[in-house]
Length: 325
Image (tube, rainbow, N blue to C red; front, side, top):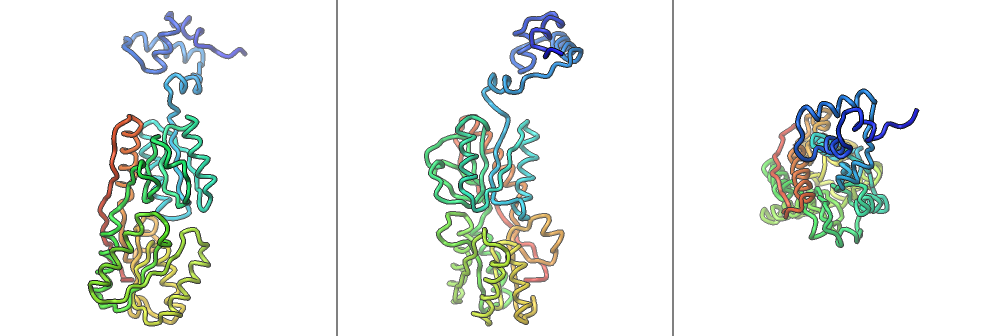
């Protein structure tokens, strides 16, 4: 059977090919009667518009790339789900890429944007040294990551979170509080959590100590860092972990070292994703506003697609009290 063409639809509907094209692309004024005639002809002929042709006509693909470290993490998993839902409501489909420790994969998604194969990009991976980010004004938005001066960042108030967690442990009587965070060389708003922790520890005359743990380390190697922490600092009575999964590893290591949580060691996490709250409701944590962060990122991307000026966005966090800290 021969493929049904635009001309066939126009002939059956009794209109011009241009009118059919305008109906398909929702351009210009057309009467309801004309629109109905075209749609009826399409249905009778079982006509399916050529998606590629429509994309070329509109000069857009209705595709947005999402590049994050992994969905196998409560925070990033929920964040990507929230982004996909909001983009879908606006008529976009998403292309998801988990680029954990693979800058080449992230660069491939950038190339899709450069080639016009996607309309925009929302990124939050931890790869460093990608020069292409510094040479573009294309529609890119970052979440919890600093990639270049040209690209706006959506972040929770990490400094506020660092202060809330540290103050909670200080108020609980902790004398030897250890913090975990990414390596100091990684350009990320996470470093503001460390700044909040360190400033409060200095204010209260306490020794500040941060154990650096790369997000990309396998879980067994992360667990080994916490084992080493308790071996090197048996006096530790408080841990402010930079994410909830590390908080869980800290609790495991404390119990392995013969310490009780929270009687001997109090632990506070960070992120407060829905799945973590469901599976580990006893964890005291700093909750990031993940739905609001996703909405802010989509709003910024829409503005960038429209050629509008944008600024970075910072959103408040809150402490969720639990039994661990």
